[in-house]
Image 1 (cartoon, rainbow, N blue to C red):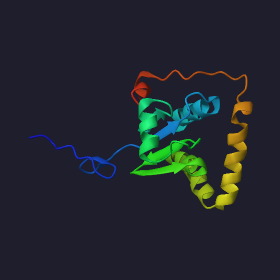
Image 2 (image 1 turned 60 degrees about the vertical axis):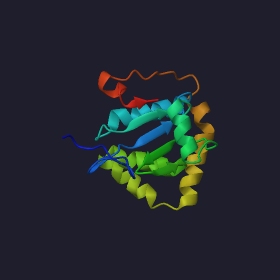
Image 3 (image 1 turned 180 degrees about the vertical axis):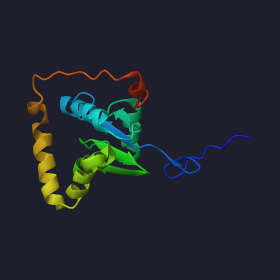
Length: 147
């Protein structure tokens, strides 16, 4: 008799939480570079990547009422984080000193974090203009890109 698979409140097996998901804009160079950065610096290697306009990306955005949100989404344990909160969650996920940096950032006043996020978000296309560096995931990373 095998272990029954249970899907409830972010738990897919008894005692095992679902991995976090990052919903990102696959057409945005800045977002793609962010994904590459995470892959290069993560300690855990369990984050799932979902392109915003993929079938799963659209379904997740609809489920969480985030269809109109033009932000990276961090989904973990049936919670969704947007804008600067998603960035903080991503840094905490990375582990090491990045994680400490994320924890420190989470202590900053929300208006300051929002202003910093807006500055980068409004400039992201200009910041990445002319830079094309396509991600070629390794075979181990490929199965973490879900659609």
